Image (cartoon, rainbow, N blue to C red; front, side):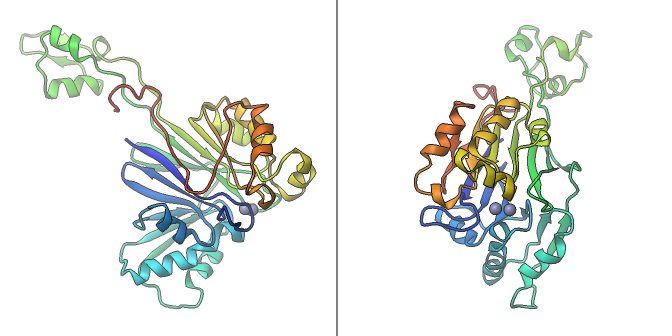
Amino acid sequence: MDLSVRFLGTSASRPTVERNVTSLAVRRGGETFLFDCGEGTQRQMMRYGVSFNVGEIFFTHMHADHILGVTGLVRTMALQGRTDPMTLFGPPKSERLLRQAVTLGSDKQHFPINYVEMTPGEPLVRQGYSIVPFSVDHGGAAALGLAIIELPRLGRFNPDLAREMGIPEGPLWGQIHKGQAVTLPDGRVVHPSELVGPTRSGRKLVFTGDARPSETTIEIAVGADILIHEATFADEEAPLAIETGHSTAREAATVADRARVKRLVLTHISSRYSRDVQELAAEAREVFPGAVVARDGMELVIPFDDADTLEG
Ligand SMILES: [Zn+2]
Ligand SMILES: [Zn+2]
């Protein structure tokens, strides 16, 4: 099962020559959805080959640099003759504003759009994974982070041993793999523990949206395969980060370090670092050595821990 993210916009507050405002395309198992949809996202999707066949957009909060792109994107989809429904998820009390953004300048709705206000801590349960919205501190705005948390996977099946034990390849293997004891034609009973290893963890991706560093983020990000944390400012603007409800690169790295995540990617970069992110990267790496700063178009594939073997 593939899982990847593509950064469609990595700039804070306003676009720059190098960077568009926030949007993240998440791909899992042939499905694509967006986290945030800043102004110009549709053009970034074209530029970086992201399918317009998006059924869901999740908004972290209602600041303009995260939502203005939905107006144009929905209009283009309508022009293309889309009939499939779309669902827009937002934080509490977001529906009115999202509805306004979608209908701006046009009363006609060409395809059905549903609005869902998410509740922090209440997972949206999908087949094999959940999307978990969590509260973040963004200077008083109703803001959420979003985590994709996969269910644990079945343990590894040992085909060599199964053959050795004379268990015919076929449906019996599947039953044993799924945890059922089976009786062989000769009367022997095989228990799953004889052939199947321990359950393996699924993957976890955490996106903070705009946020101060917080215990809630650390808690949900524990052991994450990837933490995408906003890092609007460098150390020298630490007071401004507090004032505006954002994080410095060093603060983001501290969250990553405390949550013991495997990878940290910084995004939502202030325009003053748009061209040269060395300062942000260096400060983050003093705390979390592997930290990288996202750039527009960057794609990250998130493999399973044990990716050398067959995915289950
Ligand atoms: Zn923002
Ligand atoms: Zn914001």
